Structures are given as structure tokens and as C-alpha cells.
Length: 197
Image (tube, rainbow, N blue to C red; front, side):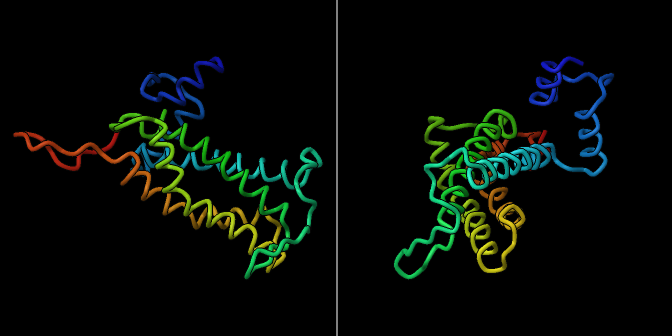
């Protein structure tokens, strides 16, 4: 299978024939065997890739000399009642989170929830997604900075804990507010709560 057809099959799994195999087929079989809804599997895959984007971005911004305009490591800043012990870590984690959020929104819009109704302008949905997901990035940034400063853990491990804490929020808001199911019509023969594709 060529790379372009593999990418197309990954983004549009309904075009894969039963004779095709590989990583996509493996994950599809795993999801079917464990009775996982496809939307949840897609949501988890997007979240996993967003986590990798966050970790890579955090590394590039925090641990490499590529961004010399950022504050130096361990540069303290006093913000009223609290003191930030590592300003570079705070700025780097905020930028890395926003890069991951951009990826997540685009992937959910075009892949995870593409079969669900979309009302209004895409920019409004992006702002709604950003606003509703502010809790999860806040959890990740606070966890990354707090566990690194207080317990001395590596920021990448602290970020992984924050991602796990923010998952439930993202799933609930994404499936209930941003891309909700279409309302079931009250028609003869219509079944409420039909299985998601």
C-alpha cells in the first residue's frame, strides 16, 4: 500500500476494503473486538498524536537553544500572590499546548466528528473548542509547572499526568457540546440511541 493510500485509509477508514491489512486494519480489529465506538478510538488517536505534538513542542521550546528570545531556564517572575519559578517552562508549555489544540481541532473537525452536524462558521466552532478546552490545557500547564517545581519531576512526565487528568473533560465537552449527536427524529421505525459509526 502506498503512503498516500495509507494516509487516505487512515483518515477515511470506510474506503478500506476487507482485503487490506496493516496498522489500520489491526486497530480496526482491536476496536471491534473490544466493542469500542469508532468515534472514541478516533478521539483517542487524535489525543495521542496531540500529546506527541505537545511533548515535541515542549522539548524544542524548553530544552533547545532554537528559541533564544524565550526567558532563560529558572528565570523567576513574581505575579502578585504567586512566584513562577521557571518562566521559560511556563511560556513553553503554553505555546506547546496551543499547537496541540490547533491540531486537535483540525483533526476532530475533519476526521473524528466529520459525520456529525456542524452548525455555524468554523471559526466560531474553533473559538468554542478553544474556550471549552481551556480547562484541559490549564490542567496540563498547571500540572507540568507544579509537579516540576514542587516534586522536581521532569516536565515531560508531569505533562503526561496532566494529559491523563484532562482527557475526561475533553471527551465530555467534545461529544456533548462541540460535536453533539444529531437529535433523533420522532418517526415511525426510528430508533433512539443508534450506534455511532
